[in-house]
Image (tube, rainbow, N blue to C red; front, side):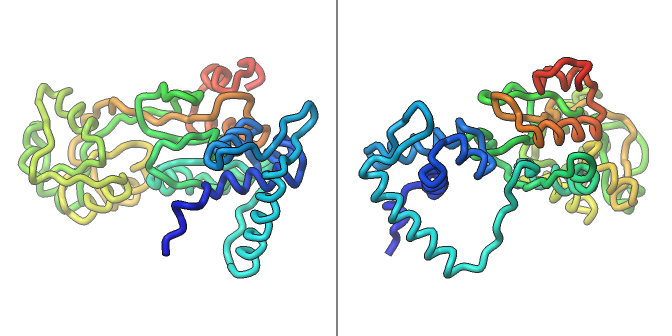
Length: 310
């Protein structure tokens, strides 16, 4: 029997139980490595789902209502049962932990090679990854920083452009040799590979006066990792998107087909929730900006800091 429709969202129960146990939203936020606003919204979501109030908001902290006291007892019993009967991974928590959201390709092709360096130093950090294609609500899900590909300006977050992509065609070394040099339109004789957005290919062909629309013989993959895999396996031509593709080109897994580049209309953005960033998130943002070659002036606005402090 499916009981899921009768259950409130589990994240709201975790926020509720922690706030009830610690006596305040601020203490719960610190314990859960979330913002005060995220805890408040989770509790409000739970109250809306239940149709009743579980807390009385007071000048200093919160107090349980009679309904909240009954819910707390049942919630703690349920959490205790889950803890006793499960052997599961416990997510790292603490002031040095930074919750970071990115797509699979950004994580594997850009972040992982830099992870050790990003975590080391003073202060030492611990990056907890949330790998996802969807555009998450950073505040509601307790995400400190995110990298997303797009055109920027997403609502509910502060963004700074991290890097752009000057793209060029690549293929397996064998296919690249077979295609050889020549006019740009020669590439249209082969299947073209792209991810969920074909804007890069349209921009590349448009820079040479050609119109491109995806065709039946072309291939689409949701993640750029698969685009590179497909190109390396000889399934067609892809676009190298530096810096994500740099290591694979250098290793010879894929080869340049045409040296001419075009600017991808979409670029990579470093995002954070509204409000003051946590110290650990601020430290990680500085290190990411340094790895991406982002200027101190651009980062200052992102962090709401003076340029000299960045």
